[in-house]
Image 1 (cartoon, rainbow, N blue to C red):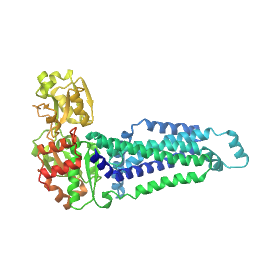
Image 2: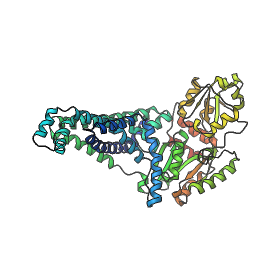
Image 3: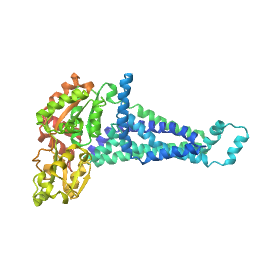
Image 4: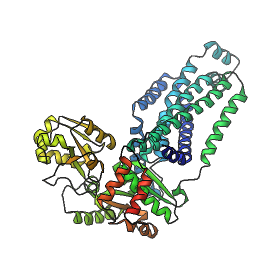
Length: 517
């Protein structure tokens, strides 16, 4: 536990500073958007109703969905500006997170401000007009000052919402305290999960109390209190901004990873080789499968590991099943021609989807192949990762074998294995390079029709890095160097219930075991 806590503390400045800057920028932008809307809506029901309805509607969209939806929108806009004006902007990470959180911050500020102004004593407003104040003077000198305490209460609510929701920015490539939570959940590292939650809660509480100090100063007409609270808040943001820039801003490399154990290990392995060459590196982990490739093709990432079957089905939308070597050759040509992405080479093992069952249940049902599984599938429940049922591979399995299960359930990969062992599901879509298959004594069902394509682990380079001699020289020794047995052992080091290693430790072991040092 001490080693895990130490590793959590080591990255705290990076995660916390990124979280603070994202939250502060989103809240500031939310206030800047809300105040003009408040002014426009305070006296007009025609403006007030649609503005509040739109802000309320945004709150019904799940935070992680809102964050993810901005990425393809910004990616398209970036491509358009590049085509029209010759410049583009990063669509992954900070910008989609900023826009989504800004939208989330608006409702409490707007609702509290409008409610405060609408409930002001009419006599006060009449007196203001009676002494000759214009509408603008009435707003600035009477309405907003009197509404300020309640408006600040809305800002406090908004700040807590934003800080909490910002932990969901990790899957779109933005570093935040959510990195602790997403990584910890995947690896069942509850120290990291609790640490990330505790720091996020502490940040929200401290921010709320500083905003409460500003609110107290405004309500009691004590400017010193308000200025003190604001000064401490700004000092905190300035301290966060002083943390060194990410590696990419200093001419380094961005290494991407999807959201499961093997990807974290391989990202650490690649990052370690680049750091050993003297180059700064940023790791952007926890990305969705399609988002990772889109980010690479848009030069938001420099390098990451993907799988040939995923690229063949989901990126190129091919349905044929060529031999492994032919698939790799065609992938290299098609990815370079269509996206400018370079397939540097295969690592030497496959991480294919497989259908797996508990040995005892498979024996009792007489199931050894997917074809035999189809006979009993209507009585069984299938568990899969969060992406599998949207993949062409599942549709092909369903069609070719006539699979019809009693129920389908989705899990984070780690919990999928627990669901199988506890009997909540009967079959899972396991991964062939996962060490838990052997440790849990699972039976992998044969695929006699060869519906599941090859899933060779391959290194992809972004268009801007395709001819980067330093990057290629650092990574070429990995090609063909990792057998599946070593990858399974490295994965299980992180996934095993006791004596866990971090992805970085597993990557270091893998480098030594594969004689890469």
